[in-house]
Amino acid sequence: MIDRRRAQHRGRREHGGGRTELARTLGLATGKAPPIQGLVTFQALGGGTLSQPNWSLDLQAPEITPLSGPFHSGRLRVQAKGSLDRATVQSIRWESQDGVLELDGAWSRGRSSRLALTLENLDLDPLAALTRVDSLKNLRGVFQGELEIPGDPWALPRWDKVSLKATGALDR
Image (cartoon, rainbow, N blue to C red; front, top):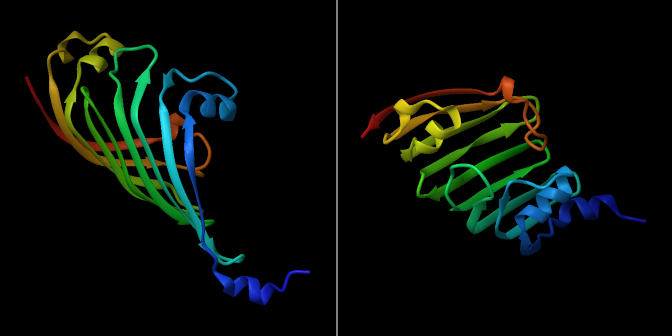
């Protein structure tokens, strides 16, 4: 039998980590092969008490490669921490020939995720290819904004409910 009072105050921290092939892991989670590949390394830390557990995650992927489409390979780093009721995205950073994307923000139970978004030196050629809007070719941009994603952060969002408010500038 577990002594709950003792277990609640123990506050033990557990470390873990490893490497995984991104396509295989996402394929197992979603049931279909994703259009990307790359090796991901991660470190995870869990702690707190039984009644108030907490966690932190540091994930790095030195090269993620899209298997199709106009985007280039890039590097990803994710740093986050949280508990059962909230999560803080300390940093999500993606770097490639296409530019740099940075996100940070928070989620708490019963509220939407709100993330600050920064895009630097964004190459709009891939967007031109996807949308078939030729006037976006040979443009680069800098944007800042806020991304709001309703619902639980552990589930895939309904993209028709996601909102983005951003300002920016374009340059040839």
